[in-house]
View 1 (spheres, rainbow, N blue to C red):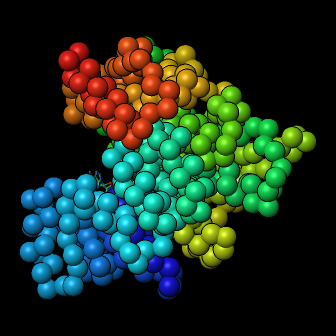
View 2: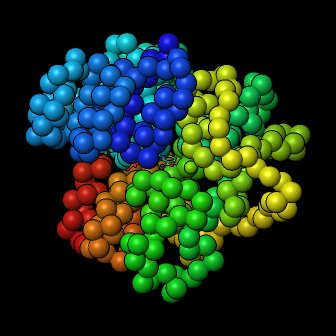
Length: 380
Ligand code: NAD
Ligand code: MG
C-alpha cells in the first residue's frame, strides 16, 4: 500500500490527486488538509477514511468534528493541524497542494519527518528553496515535481544521471491574453482572467498564468529542482500546451515530453515514480495536430516574467517579496480592489523598496512576507 497525505485536498490538484488514488488499488489516504470547504472535506473523509483531517479555521474544524463524530478520524485546525497532516506517522508521501507560502512550514515538517514530497506548491520552493533542497538531501527523501512542466523536465532527465543540462526549455501557453499590449489589457475583468485556454486550475494560479507570473515562479522552481542557473532556463511560448517542457544537453540533443493537458499524469507519475501506470484519457493525435507552434515570450507587456528573473537572479529574500506581493495583489484583483495591470505594478514597487537579506531563515522569510503585506496595505 502507498500511504499518502494530501495537503489542500479540496482544491484542483487535491481533488485530482484523490481521483488518482481512487483509480489505483494500492493507494491509501492517511491524512487530508483543507482551507474551509468542510462539506467537500467531509465527503472525502467518508470516502477515503483518513486517520487525520485538518481544517484551517478553528470554528470550521469544530463543525467538521461534529459532522464526522461517527467516524474514527482526528480533526485538527490551524498551522498545527496542517503540520500534523504533513507529518502523520503512517504516510510515506505528502502531496503539497495548498496554494501559497502557507506551504513552507508543513513542507519542511514533512521533510524533517522523512516523508517523500510530491510538490505542487511551487511558492514554497520559490521562497525557501535554499533551505529545502539541502534538507531534502540531508534527509534522503524524494522531491517529486507535480507541476506539469517540471514533471516533464524530470521525465526528460530519466536515465541521464551525470549528463549535464545545458538549457531547460520551459514551455508556456502564454495564457488568455497572449499577443495583447498593456493598453489592450488595462480593462481586463476577473471573469476574463479566470478563463485559461488549456488548463482548468485554482483561481490564483489561473490569474498567475494570465500575467505570466506563474511562468516566472516556475523558472525559479526549475532552478531549485534541477540545480541550474536562472539564465539556463529559457521560456518558450507553445500556445497549444502539447509540449510540457524540454531539456537541451551539452551535445545539443533536446529531449521533450508531450501529451494532452491533464494534471493526473504528473500527479500519478510523482506518486508511482519510477513506475508508469495505465491512465485513461485522451491521447495526442499527431495527424489531427498537424503542427506545433513556438513564440518568444513578451517580456515588455508581461513584466511579471522579467521581475521573476530579477528576483530569482538576486535570490535571498527577493523571491519571497516577489511572491508575497503577487499573492496579495492577486487576491486584491480577485476581490475587485485593483485593476489587472496593477498586479505587476505592486510586485515591482514592493521589490524596489526591499532590502535583500542574502540567506534568509524561515522566520526571516515569513517576516519579509509580512513586511510586504504591510507595505501593500499602506499604499493600495
Ligand atoms: P486551489 O485553490 O484549487 O486549491 C488550494 C487548496 O489549498 C484548497 O484545498 C484549499 O482549501 C487549500 N488551502 C488554502 N489555504 C489553506 C490553508 N490556510 N490551510 C489549509 N489548506 C488551505 O489551488 P490549486 O490550483 O490546486 O493549486 C495548488 C498548488 O498547486 C499551487 O501552489 C499551484 O501553483 C500548484 N499547481 C497547480 C496546478 C493546477 O493545475 N491547478 C498546476 C501546477 C501547480
Ligand atoms: Mg505549470
